[in-house]
Image (cartoon, rainbow, N blue to C red; front, side):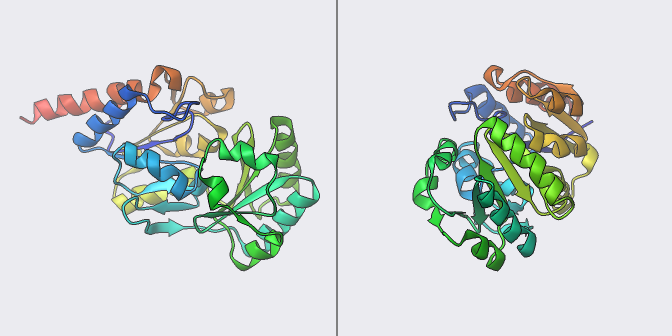
Length: 279
């Protein structure tokens, strides 16, 4: 199969724990793009926080952000499409999280809104260094999201605490919102049916590329729908057991430049052979 669209998760897949990108990955992505393959990013990050990595990678195709809540053009910021949470469930979600002592962060537009600044926000700031100066403090956060629904709501905390919140919320909001664990420290809520898989399907249709011609790589539970939708879904070696079991194959870890390995094996070698065959 010739793959025409490659969708890459960012953190834990392209970007390592130190928030850097291995040179081999940079070179492999550049080579794939030169061969005519559309390479995109599929991340839970907000557009602003993902953009520096997208630019470093030289990607100019629309990319998935906000946990699948939006697909935007990196050059203009224009949305190919967006899906916000429904207003009333979003309001009740914020109230429930605050009442339970959780720390919600609502992504409205490209600004993060919080009810107050606490230590939990510092967990998020590690992954988005501009978040603190960009954040809007809104003590009436539930009313704010009811008036302007967010593209996603993130809640941060220690792993066991996040797991507990997810279990309670999934039972309380069954069907009204979708919940996913995007990181050991983060749980997230999106509109029903909105995830990286649905966003990748929409982007592929927008580009006129078939599902079977799409390859996706990821490492966290929020990547599972994307890996299952793609013609070939690959899990990083550092992915959890659930993600590896959902994938078609497991590749080397982010520390081993697994994305570069996968592009060489599944995309570049085939592209080179086909190019030679047509000359």
